[in-house]
Amino acid sequence: MASPSVAVNPPVGISGMAVYLPPYRVDLDRWCEWTGNDAVKTRAVVGHAFRMPGPDQNVYTLAANAVLRLLSHYAVDPRRVGYLALGTESSSDNAAGAVVVRGLVDAALTAEGKPPLARDCEVPEFKHACLGGVYALKGGLRYLACDGRDRQAIVVSADIAEYARGSTGEPTQGAGAVAMLLEANPRLLQLDLAAAGSASAYRGLDFRKPFLRFAGQTPGRHGHLSDLPVFNGKYSTDCYTDATLRALDALFAKRGGSHAAYLRGLAAVFMHRPYHHMPRNALAMAYLAALDHDAAQGDAEAAQALEACCAAAEVVHAEVSREWREGTRACAGDALPVDAYPAASRLLKAFRKRDGYRDCVEGKLRLGSAAAMELGNLYTAALPAWLAAGLDDAAGNDVALDNHELLLLGYGSGDAAEAIPARVVPGWQAAARAIRFQVALAGAVDLDRQQYASLHDQGALDDAQGTGPAGVVIDHVGTHDDHDLHDRGVAYYRYLGQP
Image 1 (tube, rainbow, N blue to C red):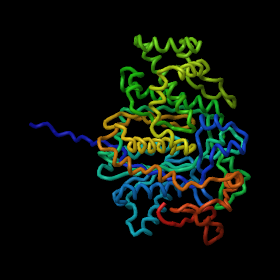
Image 2 (image 1 turned 60 degrees about the horizontal axis):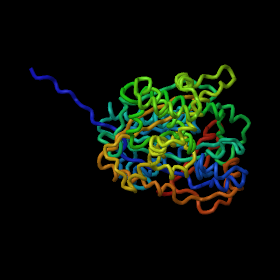
Image 3 (image 1 turned 90 degrees about the horizontal axis):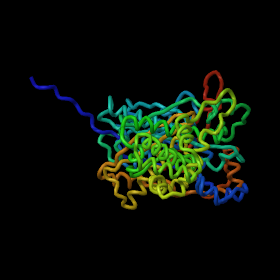
Image 4 (image 1 turned 180 degrees about the vertical axis):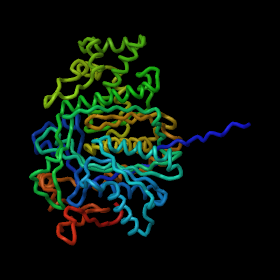
């Protein structure tokens, strides 16, 4: 009797990406002039600029415009899309989410004489701080691997990062959206969820957005409310590092072998990027922790490299190992824990001056990094935006990536992290060139000090240079709260042509 055949699922992954950025731009050199901050340090640590949504934009219009670009750039038949997920932490409706984006996309497609998205399309929204987009991505890949094998999925990450003027987070603001086309036998990246690593732990005072922040606010234009987070900078940074290390631990547990050799062998690494330096510090710490693991397994070369770095930093190897092992502690009541990585941070500073840092850290984060310095913090869209910039960069400069392995490291405050291996598929260049990242950056309108303050504080912009955005925008917000009609706070939209 013949053995029954076993169905082998085809690989799944990303076949296309599209980026949408609102036009309003704050140049960080000019911002430093307004605020008295050090421009050289700000550019080196944070970046070059950040974007802000216009008065007629919200997270749903940003997301819809990115999806419309994706459908156009990759000639997607909307009727094949069976899954449209939104990852965001900037929702303005606690009932509806991705279905709002679906409605805006359908209206725009209809106006263009095209068919709408499939009626049986799923429309979930994912939220976990900046990791929501990665969770949505994993959901889309699982859909394709199970009941959506002959369909396509779209995942869009969209966010608006706002911080109080005068706060330490102010230069790390940003706004934008990235849409990703997922399918079997992908044309860009094959993603391996079976080999991925996950981590999560509750960190109550890391970064939060309690509803109480809205109490007493007077809504601005189109119901604008300032969505300013509650955060603790140094502790939040430690949580980012800890979650990254723990997610990598989970990935390494599945792979086996040398941790440091795996990181060295990657063609590129893309990470959640609140500001320019943060992923560099976390990846450097991860590489040093990988050397520590390998040394404990008897790797003499790893032990020698780590001991030399410890000597240069004047730290005790055992103390650094203890810090990596224990990581970030949860808050006790309303008190922040002490610095989680004092010795490891000194080790990191010494490592930056050694030859291995350039190859094992800077070299892995090079692709798309210059373009990403124009974006600011896009929360859930920060990682996919950097990935889009990196693939566009690689295609434009004929970087050989066929069959090379990449690593995607996502993070969400609170904290949680995902480490997902990706492999670049042969012939990826055509799909990468269709990203058109420079199109997303084009048309920027630089704000002056008064315009920035008005847009930040009131959501109003009376005299910006140039014209407002195309694509989907807010028309008005409902005010009815009577017996026959309730639409108070509900946004109505209109379509102004291809974004």
